[in-house]
Amino acid sequence: MLKKLRGTVLMGVGYMLSPFSWWNDLFFNLPIAYLFAYLFSWIYPGSFMVFTIIGYWLSNILGIVMMQFGAVDVFFESRSQNRKRDLLIGFAGSTVYTAIVMILMYFHVLGLPDFLALLNLGMN
Image (tube, rainbow, N blue to C red):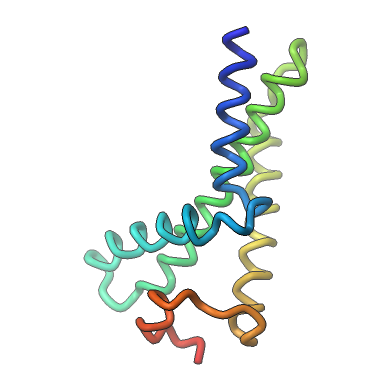
């Protein structure tokens, strides 16, 4: 029972961070990416956009991996996890998603949130 509860929590939090909940980007992923970039831009000035992308990408990876681990706990009682495979799937899925979002932002299909657009991130 505890394993299923843990899996449910992992799936819920993972969903909120994953690219499958695109509507939550504004509330979860972008603030996490912004904080990540803000902290690292102190060390590497002028690299805010790069670290925003990296932070966004890492938060999506974390969400996908958390969902995978949670789903295994909830739906597959006897199956053991293959962490390397799960990490590779999460890494690949999040990388593709982030690349698509960045391309759509570059070609102005998607707009930047106001707090990022004000920073003049080179996507004008």
